[in-house]
Amino acid sequence: QKEVEQNSGPLSVPEGAIASLNCTYSDRVSQSFFWYRQYSGKSPELIMSIYSNGDKEDGRFTAQLNKASQYVSLLIRDSQPSDSATYLCAVNIPGFQKLVFGTGTRLLVSP
Amino acid sequence: DAGITQSPRYKITETGRQVTLMCHQTWSHSYMFWYRQDLGHGLRLIYYSAAADITDKGEVPDGYVVSRSKTENFPLTLESATRSQTSVYFCASSEDSNSPLHFGNGTRLTVT
Image 1: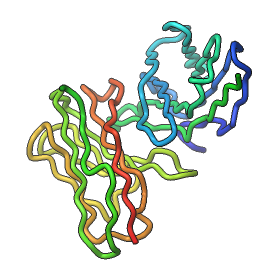
Image 2 (image 1 turned 180 degrees about the vertical axis):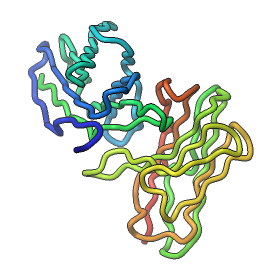
Image 3 (image 1 turned 90 degrees about the vertical axis):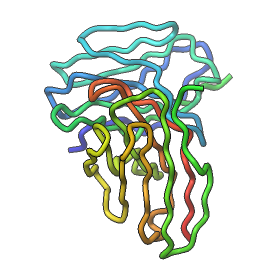
Image 4 (image 1 turned 90 degrees about the horizontal axis):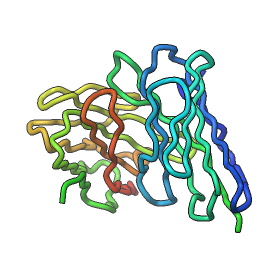
């Protein structure tokens, strides 16, 4: 089982809709969770961090963490074509001092 | 400007040659990382460093060498480049092991 799993997509949503991106992880003691956005040919850019169970909102983005079920999700409200990118989930591995990344979900927002 | 910079942005080299990719950060972050990104594999950790003079292997370290004599620099050397090392290489830094990573712009390396 991979340490961090994401559906590769593409996930296609119309402009204005809510995009829901999901990520599951295998290490129960992970404490830090991050969502990165990566445009084609660019480097990953941090968009959300979440450390405790529940929801965390930042503008149009909401990160949701459920440690009991070992999943973290990212909701993008009012999706825009400029949100079209690959979204990477990253989870820290305690004791190993590193983040493990999922392979990413490609999001396509159509006008 | 503060940040993390990688050089060169693009590099073409021949099989068997030694290549060094540079990474410099101005935040004084303790942790620095080298990842490679390939289609179908996502980001894979090559090496990381928790502080100056402390380095450790990641997921795919074979064929690579790193050093960290100063906190701000973390060069990655391919001792004898192979075609399988054609990839996009990202350097990243973080304040501590629980903090998010901040990435450089990447180096696209082609080994012919």
